[in-house]
Image 1 (cartoon, rainbow, N blue to C red):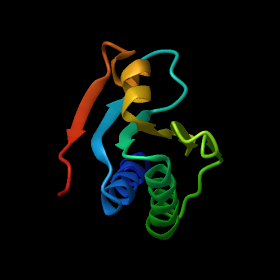
Image 2 (image 1 turned 45 degrees about the vertical axis):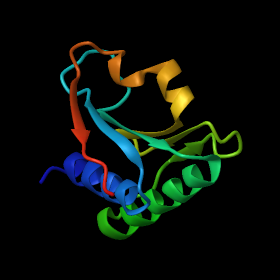
Image 3 (image 1 turned 180 degrees about the vertical axis):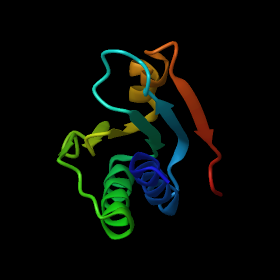
Image 4 (image 1 turned 60 degrees about the vertical axis):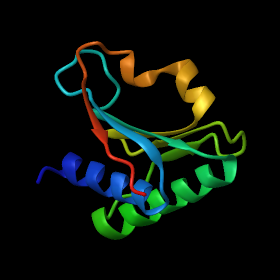
Length: 119
């Protein structure tokens, strides 16, 4: 398994452990002028849920992929959290913010992988 694939797998696991919904992996490899290889995007129910998701992702990735984000932004505002793992950027949104920015559709040629919600 490639290092990026392992990182994405553990990010998704951290999201699912805290019941994120509408998880989408946006594969940006092979697309010119992108800042990373992939986005992993999910939706949270509330600002406190965003915090729980960010904490779960951080801990799961640290423990199972031996990696830490180089930056985490947006926790204070509680509408959009971005976690920078260099090759992968995690985006945790509230519904209305996610709808507004629509990140998963900014690159028409990006491959999207939807992950089923865990009930």
